[in-house]
Image (cartoon, rainbow, N blue to C red; front, side, top):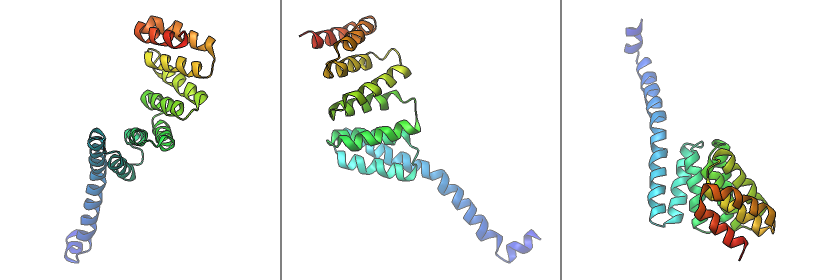
Length: 177
């Protein structure tokens, strides 16, 4: 029976299509990695638009590539497009909800755009994920300072002095000029 199907040339094309489909599926992640690595290379060379294009291509191939979304945010931020950076960081977080670095970068982007309360919320998420993230406490204190909430800024200083004296001193000098 099977030999008859091979003679009729009906199974062989189907098998070839199935094998090619499996191979294409297996290679798609590799193509996403290729474009991701290309984006890294462009980013290191300060070719931000090229990095953006490469990360977008990686995301087209593998939409749930959280690191590509995160790095796309970095490339957008480096090119001065803070609003697109914010959206990219949010997408990375939607894929990896405990991505502390995405929240940290989101906090910076919000602060750069004058959205200090949103920055505070992002830095609090970093601290929820990584309670020893000294720079998150510093930036949280700084954001409170920008909102003129000195009590909360001082609270961050008190926590920070046990984690990182240098960051604590930096925050102290900021809130006590």
